[in-house]
Length: 327
Image (cartoon, rainbow, N blue to C red):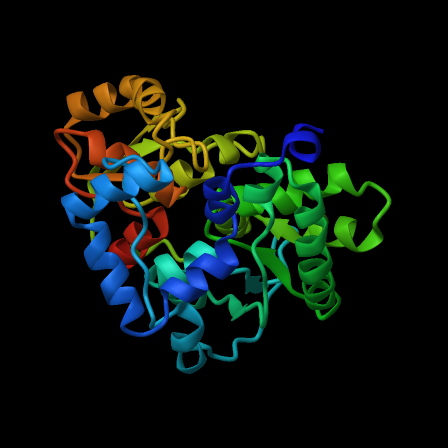
């Protein structure tokens, strides 16, 4: 209602138009230029004054060598084996972030699922899941994105695929938010039933005796911020449980908000509040002085790592799992 009556700032419309913005900033050479500017303190001051994007807020890097450009030679045909409500055949909904900002996470997914005898493909075409537009209140845009994505995903389910995504917000959108918005849409329900958190999926495979637990590399002490959009899925701490299977590895979970909340940590008017929200998590992590710090949400993880005095980088759990496997 507020969006319909009052609209939104141009900045907020741009920040939530991830398909357009990420595609443009990932054009070859443009990506290098944008990344260089975003690392420049002088430019960030100007950006703050002109757009209201806080100068200290970490912004994602962009890559012209997207996941979609890398994926074809990585895909292998594996005979699927059904285990514990999983078909053994899964499609990765790469998401805007997984395709343009962190394509290495997508390749980590492919390597790990294949290593565990799971046939994995990447969804052939996709748009943003719609979570940023929903948080803005732009339900018209959410509907357009739903109309673009759901038919593609439903067709994959009909072909026997389970579904997953590297970002908890996108998983939540298909498991919970779209079904609430469209309770009578049969295809939305079909996609909902087939969508899994990635570590929920791996844990189900493990409980069915189908997860490879031969880990040559220990990971040591891991600090883990549990993303809010993962916690509300009510699946338990499956990321922690899977990584705790690795010998010589101990995962300590922090079930508190990172303060990132989509664009909340990026905006000049709310950045300081987001830092205040993040402080309890940062304090615990700094006291722990871990070997690794991770969160399923790369944006939340980067926000915390940027503020921490003891953590020099944020890592995705799938990246750490690949490291443990030595892949």
